[in-house]
Image 1: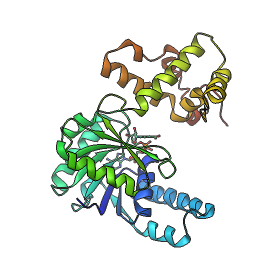
Image 2: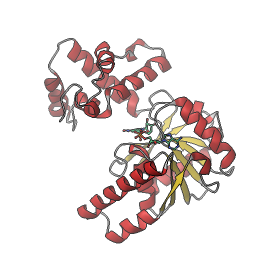
Image 3: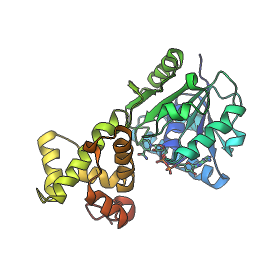
Length: 283
Ligand code: NAI
């Protein structure tokens, strides 16, 4: 199936990045937000990020203008164009809210289109069951979308091979590297990353080393670009806790229990960079 018209629901951190990469490759992009102000904010972010690419010399001024003109703002999910070939949902991480979006889209958007979710932890199979299971898939981009190479492509229980192959070649068209993943809690990225971060927090709680030293070990010893505690601060400790809970509840296995120090810091609203303090302090 040829994909030309793409609707992105939600223009936040991930949604505006997803719209950005599709627009640069000349897809017709509908950026769907709740209000006109939020849509304008998303467009302003895209414009700023495209400018940055122009300054770096990775795209030309003409490519920037063309990409920007490929994006149309749409207000309200109920106005999502019915001729969308692909709809990618990127609203906040809440199962019920996402399900409501897909129920609304099911009646609105033409029958042969594909629905995708950018969720980082909610079951693709469960979301798919609300709508069109064979034409439903996880398309998990990484942040920041224009820079990061990986897209995890998650097959729900009933995702068809045709849907998978269409989305895989689409990711390649976007100059990304797709990886096929089956639907289990945390997929691959968060199933491996979050327990590592959680273990670093256990090490800190037990006094094995200081926060700075734990990060230094992983940076200098394992060549990680960022230590796990700094990374947790950047992701947000509330997000880390929510994903650990998805792993813990999804597998019913104590090896995924969230560290009590992580829970305590979230309760104290020390959520990392966004609140000015997590394992480290930020200006
Ligand atoms: P965000 O909070 O930055 O953006 C969500 C956007 O959705 C907001 O702009 C909001 O106005 C909009 N929205 C909410 N309800 C809507 C509705 N009914 N109709 C239209 N727009 C609506 O969230 P973020 O960080 O972009 O996350 C989006 C999804 O991507 C989540 O599922 C998250 O788990 C996932 N994700 C996030 C990553 C990250 O690093 N932030 C990385 C990979 C996945």
